[in-house]
Image (cartoon, rainbow, N blue to C red; front, side):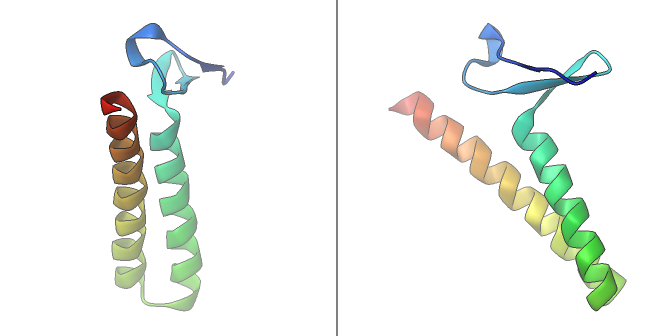
Length: 75
């Protein structure tokens, strides 16, 4: 069962319980976006390009979420 909670230790970050492990929602979004990007590009372009592009999308999503959280904490 998947449940979204807010825990005091990670205030401001929504988490999802998967098999008893708390995952920040932005990490799951990054993985899902990377998988979707990979599958779409795999059908259209070379597999090596699809892997690199999917990794870039995941890193970009993850970095944006971390930067946005730090900006919110500072201000």
